[in-house]
Length: 371
Image 1: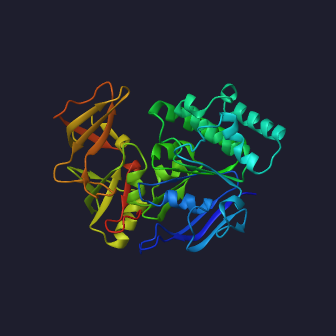
Image 2 (image 1 turned 90 degrees about the horizontal axis):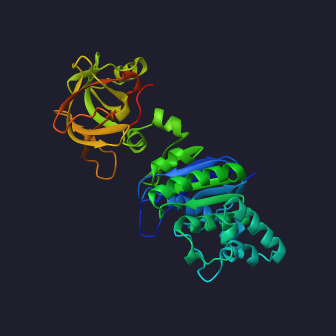
Image 3 (image 1 turned 30 degrees about the vertical axis):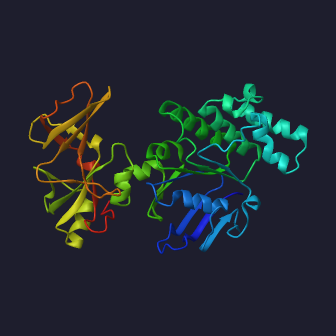
C-alpha cells in the first residue's frame, strides 16, 4: 500500500516567520491521482518537495504507506519525480537516460533493457531509444522523463508542473496521456500545477492551496459546484466566477438592478447571522439572455468570440466584481453568450440569472454560507 499522509506538516524557511506550508493535513489514497493547485507562492511545489525529501519538514510528519519518512533521505522514500525541465543527461541516449537509475541500483543489463523497453512501449518511445535528447521534441523529452520514473516502479510518482514548457496543443495531448497512463499503472501520484484547467481535467481529487494553507480538497466536480470559500470559487473555473459584494434583504440579493432570490438554506443562514450584505457568486455560464428585457443590465466593454461561445466582459452600474487573487482589486463582470449571436461592444445586455446556480459567501471571512 502506498497511501500518502501529510500530518500537520509545516515548512519554515530560515529568516521568514511565515510558513511556506502551514500545518498541512492531506490524505492521498493508494493509487489516487491527487493534484496540488494554487497561484504562485501558494506552497504547492514546497509541499511536493517535502514529500520528496528535497525540503525539510520543520513540524509534523509525512508518511508513505503508514511509515514516517520525514527524516529519511530521498533515496529511501521509494518515490520517483518528474521535473518541469525534464532533467535529462544530454550525452546519454534515451534508453540510457531511462535506465540510468536502475544502473545505479545495480540492476543487471538484461533486466534493465527489458524494463526500459516495456516503459518505451507504454510511452511510444521504442523508435527513439538510440537518440540523444537534443534530437527530440519537447513532448518526446517529457515522455522520456516519464519513462525514467516508470522503470523504477516506485510507490509514488511526484510531478512538478511537467507540462509547463510545452505549447498549448501539446499540453492538452500530454495531460490526457499522463492521466490515462496513471490510470493504467495505478501508481499513487501527486501532481503540482498552477493551471486549474489541468487540475480539473486530470485529478481524481484536487487540493487547492493559498499562502501555504489548504483551502479545500475534493473532486473536481464538487470543487466547481460547492466551493468552500470565495477564494476557491474565484480560482476554479475558466473564466472565473463573478463575485460581487451586494446588499441582502428578505427578498434576496441585490445584484445591479436585479433582486436575485437566495436558496432556502442560504437565506436561513443569512438571517441567522443577521447579515446585511454577502458576496454573491455567479458563474459566467449561469446567465441567459432575457426575453422580457427586464433582466440584469450589463454594459459590454469587450467581446471575445470563440466560435461556439462568446465571452462578454462588462460592468455593473454601481457595483464592482471582486478579484480574490493577489491584487484583490476589481475585475470585469463576465458572461458566457451564444457565439452565434454575441452582442456588440458598447451595447447594454439584459440577462436572467439561474438562481439555483448562485453561491453565497460571508462578506468578511469569505466562507460559504448555507447550502
